[in-house]
Length: 80
Image 1 (tube, rainbow, N blue to C red):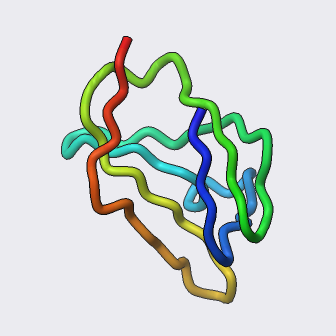
Image 2: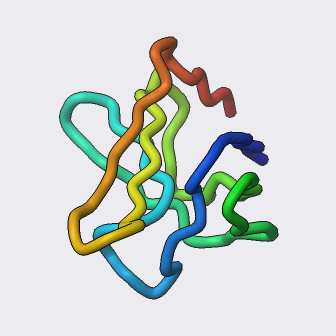
């Protein structure tokens, strides 16, 4: 489970360009199960198809007509 707190986080879970993404340089995985998706908090479950490794965590939202993107500075490590 990933818990993200911040501002302007809410996104359309049906939109393929918005959401929480894990990227390892070669592959990008969009998380698909969210237990909370509000303006100030996102709770997401890491899908079982995401292999163990180090990832960049990115949140993409569309608060206006343009997609906003923010990435966590430190790598997120997924273990088996």
